[in-house]
Each structure stands twice: as C-alpha cells, then as structure tokens.
Image (cartoon, rainbow, N blue to C red; front, side, top):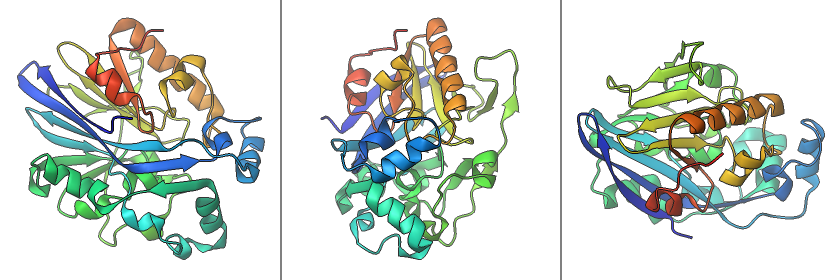
Length: 288
C-alpha cells in the first residue's frame, strides 16, 4: 500500500500541488466499516463484532494553491496507542474507542513530521480544514496552534462521538457557515479561495455536519471525501458504514457525488482508502 503521493496541478492562475500522506494506520471492527442491519442495530453489531478490518491508512491532504497552502484533516498521533489515552472521556467512550479501533502510529508518521519532510513549516500553512470532529481527523491539531482551523458550524454545534478532552486547550476553530445554492448539486458550500477552485461542501451521513473538500483544477477535480465512505467501492455500491450517524443522509450524499461525477471528471479520495495513491497517480476518475 503506497502511503505518500505528490501530484502537480494546474489552476487558472498558476501551478500547484496535491500531497497526500498517511499518518499511520487504523483497523476497525468489520461491521463499523460495513453496516450489518439498520441504522440503530448496526451500532450494537459493531460493538459486539470480533472481526477486524485490515490496516487502513489515515490520509492527510495538503493542497498547494496560488492563494495559499491548505491542510485537510490532521490525522492521528503516536500517543493514541497508549492504554489510558481515552481515560478522560469516561468509561463508556473509553470502552467504545478502545474496543472498536486499533492504531499503528509512530512519531515520524505524524502530520508535523511529514509536513517538515515536504518542506513546509507551520507558518507556510494558510488554513487547516477539518472534515469532521472524529479522533483520527483532529488528533494532529497540536502542530497548528498558530494556524486558522476551519470547522463547519453544524459539526461544531452537533458533533457525533467527539472527544473534546483530546482537543488542545487552545483549540478555538473558526466556525464556518455554508452558503445555500439550491441549483447546485452540493447545495451547501463555502468557497475557500477567491478563485472558487477549493470548496468546502456539505456531505452529511457519517456525521450530520460532515463536509468534504472539492478541489477543481484545469484537468481533473479531486474530491477529498473524509469519511463519506471508507473506500470507493462503498460509494459505487451505495453501502452504509456501521459508523454512519444517518444512513438516509449518507445515501443522499452518495447520489450527489455520483451526479457530480456525471458532469465532471473527479478523482474520489476517502480518508481510509488504500487505493487513493494509485488513483491519483493514474488519474483514475470516478466512473458511475
């Protein structure tokens, strides 16, 4: 499994780059990844499940754009492997997180070390965008204490299984409201650049406030999908994950992404898909 990739991009106003790297690996209960039963009973199934998935990457994305450098999600940190890491969240959440997820993360895999290897300092980063507030997407925040961090307002106000005891004590994100465009496929969005080439789009399902980052270039679009699905096959086959907060919203999101892919060539990049690097390298856009 290739866990780093760098892809040159062309924008209207100049050249750029898309970098991806995995901040370690996570394994989840098989029924957390692929739902068994309906929305409520699926939660019981993954708590009782004894089968684990193979190790999955924890992707972080770096977009180098003429208007700045953007980091999408912050990945995991090596401390997550400590037995008492979730202790401050109480018995229930500590039990769920230690019994549902396994991690393999080393210090050199953390987002700070990998950004440094690419030649970026914190001062080079224009903004950090969090797709949602689950552990493996915010747990590298401590590298960005001087950077603007964007979170969708609904995600901030109504998080699903967030772990606030693990937030850095300085964490006060810039709460981002989405504009409504009823004529667009993604009817709730926020433009992150003046060029409108980087958009935060609402993709609810995994959480109700979940967002993805849509990157438009001259040749292809890149859909940085967070946990919309765990891999591309789940999107194409419209399979719910047991960890989704709303199956109904997830199905609507799948439909929106597929409709978008009928209009533009888009490379689909979920945060835990081991084939992301290959799709980027081969310009393998979504075929629906």
